[in-house]
Image (cartoon, rainbow, N blue to C red; front, side, top):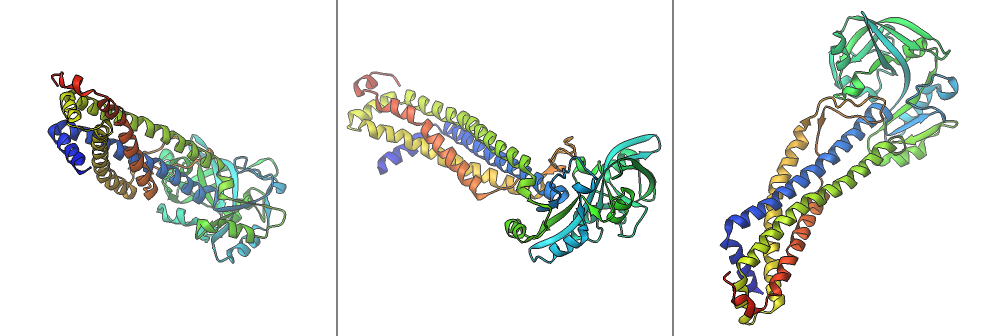
Length: 408
């Protein structure tokens, strides 16, 4: 077997340019697949993280018939005495924050422009608002007793040319089925780097939001964040909220989970296409080698080398090309993925609405996993080796007498 390996190495070295180009094709395919897998995984992971942090939480308590997209203010669709319930949940060790939130549909009027928005009533001191506090660009954060202040998102502020201290008129729906209008002062401008959300969401202290919407002592939901996502089931079982529904992040984000599964399926077919092109290159390389070495194969057969040994010769060449290509591909792909996983790459505003059920930031951060490295490497190796089977079989079937009479 050692002499077959030596012959394979020698044969690859006889046409270095072709061997290098073939290995390069494998390495590019491997690096591309690794980068694409990490990018899609990172995109879906980022979307889920943003949706959990901005809309659903790891857990959410709400009335049975409440739907976030409808923003109903009917008493039967809301939670009564939400602060008392959230304070009880805060005592659970795995809970990072439990905070009532009130969703109100409204319109912002400024000069001659009007914009439809969602007003979110929040409990300002809650840890659940860390993302807004950390993303404060201008001005100051809200206080619980502020009766005239709001926070607006950076894209909305830029589109209307608004700054802290400016006044806007808000027209909001009420629980009585009518609307109320009041002038508010912009206390600050925030960004979560989620354009679809930031340009459509105004933050207001919970008590003021309850007063203007006529929903005193009621909230749309109790939003719960955990220290660890893995504790979701345990905390859900520990929550005591009779008369209300407790849903976890999987139930609240079914659409994202389905899209992620579809993305994985699409990635599988994309992998097949890229590896299919790569396998074609390898097959062509080995077929050319068979054609050029027909006389040599005849000599080997005449010297007693059996068909299975000749087949092994070409399969080992394919294997060596595959191993070399995959190693180079990993040497290119892994550092590339690790670099962009830290820096990300900018995609800007993709035009996704805040009510679409998806949250997309302005950048994608690829998410590398050992599983992707292993699966991509094994797939590239297997398909490359299999692509060499046909040329190897053709070589093993050559009759020594016929092969010796060729000029190749």
